[in-house]
Image: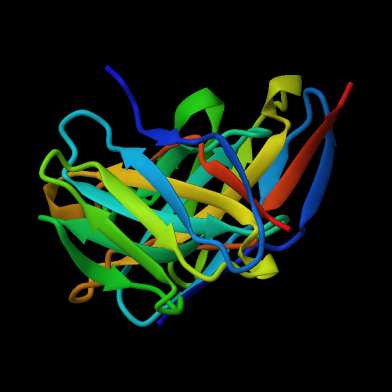
Amino acid sequence: DAGVTQSPTHLIKTRGQQVTLRCSPKSGHDTVSWYQQALGQGPQFIFQYYEEEERQRGNFPDRFSGHQFPNYSSELNVNALLLGDSALYLCASSSKQGRSTDTQYFGPGTRLTVL
Amino acid sequence: AQSVTQLGSHVSVSEGALVLLRCNYSSSVPPYLFWYVQYPNQGLQLLLKYTSAATLVKGINGFEAEFKKSETSFHLTKPSAHMSDAAEYFCAVSALDTGRRALTFGSGTRLQVQP
């Protein structure tokens, strides 16, 4: 049973560029959440998708956008990259519409470096 | 609103000694609480979760945590540390209020195990 997968593993971009990160949820899961983990900090919630719609959003600017596809996979897009966007981006999947009691399973993350 | 405070960004114990990692939470509604572990260059793995059933929760790898409402705490313990326990540990809270499904994480505690 494949767990949550993310691609790419590492990415280097320059300021002002745009980036797309991808996530495939665990088999049987229909909800995808994205988190940003800056170095030395805990993950921070960006947004969550279910039924191809953004259901909840954290305190992140509109430069951060996402998408969920019919097969439940998801993309995170970041426009106009800033140095401060350098972080580990984690994708988590869950089932049953992401109720609070459902466990979120995390992928290995994508390490984004902005130069 | 919810928040998590993890006391001690670094904890060092000897192999075979008791592990105690502290977590205090703040939540305006009954919380659900989680402990995750993160090994270097990896995603997050769930250790255990509290979802309003038994207050003493047992998890994987010999870890357990006790929910104490009066102290708003959810400390993680393990009777005997193993070298393989060295990792970053994150406490997280989620609430069952309307539309609130995201995890709010603490800043993490790095556990070192000395031989």
